[in-house]
Image (cartoon, rainbow, N blue to C red; front, side, top):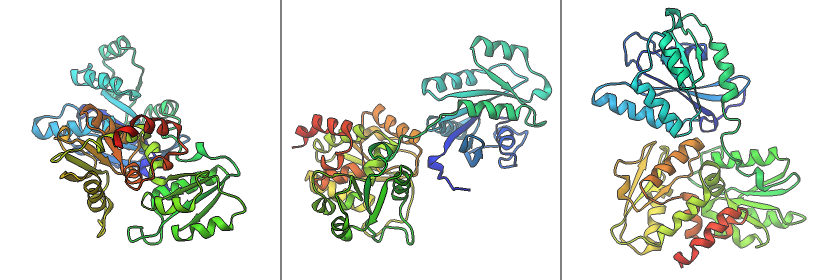
Length: 410
């Protein structure tokens, strides 16, 4: 069976009050005892994720969350995590207790899901004890379709799965490269191999781009930057597209004629996971930075930093050299921004290759709400190396955005 990265799977959040049977529903859907089940409210504290195949739909991730009615200071932190999980999910299963009426927390949850445009199904659990008729009346008044299940007796689970499959999004993320290439095109992938590259394998964006190009029946040629000129000379005609690493863009551009479209893996990832015009717009703030301004470099995952690490060393150096300003640059790793996000004048975000698109868009929206411009590594590095707008050639919307802001950067 093909292994699919969690970042490429549909994320389904299982949400509800404590002790309504969220963990039991996860176990019933999986057909195995993954989540701990107890009659004690609040058994699930931190989100529990499980990847599995929801056939015939495909690969998904189920996320078991803490109760939305948790109590105390620690409980509020757990609720905050649940809310963040929801904002990053593609779909939600709202679990209710068949014996009880709708509670205020549940009404707030349903309203929040509508607000953030996350599609959901309501599952009434514990029907072995009977269903409260007032609950059914309340759901009918709200025009909410529900499914009645018993996780204990394994009743209604298959019907719930079938409904989920019909309601899950057909496509989670836009293409990486397939919309800018055609069958029979020649695509040259320039893949520098340096100390930061994992031994024996390529990095995820390179693998995904190569595979997607092959799926489009294109001719894919892979080489290192030092071998690019020889590779181009050996081709009978110029390639239709060249894709390279951001840090090698200028070396590669020297060998690639202007009439050949050129871009980077990071720019492909920027529009695949987020919104490329928004990242281009973030460049405007680079030209507006002043002494003492705070810049946040956000790494969504953790990794072993190399001696000349891109996020902690190179980008801070390039920022200061380019702006000639005394900037305060902070680096954070993980899924959360710092609480003082509004203090920053600019966010420089990693490529987000390990995030779902919805998670990346949620992080971008959080920056927007705080009025903090955001740019990603690939766009910023290409700009610092003088490769903008060259590296934007294949993307009309990005070129249009660049035309709007370029006078502010001169």
